[in-house]
Length: 240
Image 1: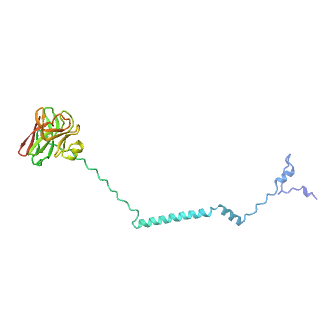
Image 2: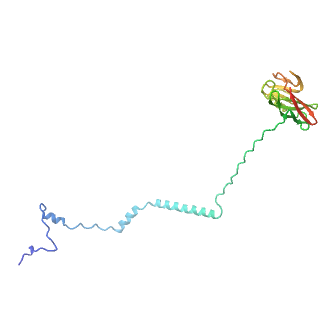
Image 3: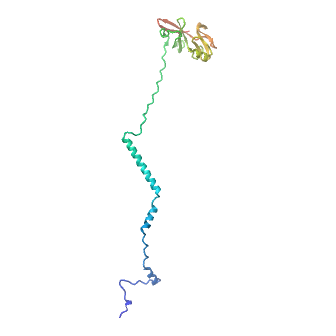
């Protein structure tokens, strides 16, 4: 009877013999696999899932913010549906600045510079420009209605100087600015504070002229301008 131990099982082939490797090592390499890990229970999965969830206060905060946003959106929608909404303040357009007044156009002499109708009141006056043909200069001048139905014209440029004289009808300014008390309007020189009285005569190189020096260091009365009355017209003729 043949030896069964020598018969090879075709389904269990004999392991090859490798030099330097013992049969024990080869057999260990074909050892049975390790047993699978024990299954995770449902409670363990729940605990793990709960540990990964955010804290309750975070959840409540997010829910509160979401609720507040919904409430604000609902309120805005309701207000716009009623035609409400924030009332816009009407824009008031700034008023444009008033245009500057054009410079007064003064009468020009020689020629008509005023009328007796316009200067019907005593101490009324009219400023004008007189063209001095001897010097080809335009100088400021003035004609005044004096007491006694007298009209007198004179240059407003100070004699032998460049300061412009002023006709002072404000007696308080005459007192405060010139330290001079008077009962009627006067002519003043703001540069040297001289005061001239048109009711009185003073000397000049051409003779006596109105505007005697009442105060100050002026050398003579204002330069006179000859005028003529033709009907109601007051005409400036020439300067002294």
